[in-house]
Amino acid sequence: IVLTQSPGTLSLSPGERATLSCRASQSLDSSYLAWYQQKAGQAPRLLIYGASMRATGIPDRFSGSGSGTDFTLTISRLESEDFAVYYCQQSGRAPPYSFGQGTKLEIK
Amino acid sequence: QVQLLESGPGRVQPSQTLSLTCTVSGASVSSGNYYWTWIRQPAGKGLEFIGSIFTSGSTHYNPSLKSRVTILLDTSKNQFSLQLNSVTAADTAVYFCARFVDYYDLDEYYFDFWGQGTLVTVSS
Image (cartoon, rainbow over all chains, first blue to last red; front, side, top):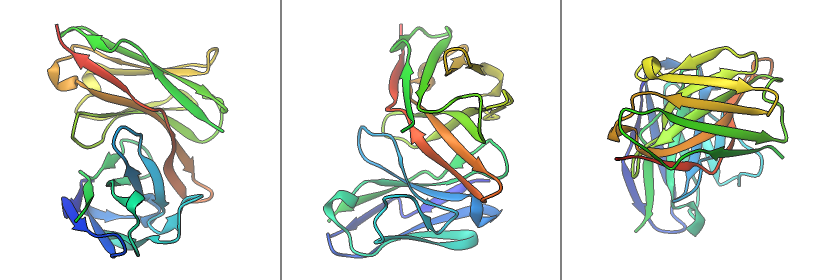
């Protein structure tokens, strides 16, 4: 399954709402869709799993939704620490796994 | 708290073998529903799945790399390793090891712990 993220870059200001898209090349059980945040020089951090379940310690301004082939990560009110690169990832019942190409969220 | 730490040479010559080790603390590599995984990231690019090894020892590889990759468990040292043969400049990347959770009974699947990553440069 190929994951395509859009947009490639999103320029927004703190306090604004961010909507990131992840489209799968074929229908995907939502249990197998996760979102990660990666800051420069760091490993990715789990934000959302099962398409909509927030990981431990993740603020409630982050939310995930979607089903089938279309999934969305929403950040309700951007804070300065949210500007980073975001990846969706699918797993299926077994590897191989795949990642989207990423969306860079930058300060406008 | 689970921790993963990658180690290995930072430079490998073209056509040689890249060898990395991931040392795990706070969890056993031989128990639980986990896939111990290698992922890489070329500079300025996205994440690429290389391969995984289940706690039972079964392996799964990226089809595009399968002919060159071997992942092994060393339960005595609580480590897993990556070998990538016949490397070229295209294999230059930061290599991450990570744990993938496969909680079938809870319907939960995700990478929960990652190493800090190690840069491997393929160059003579």
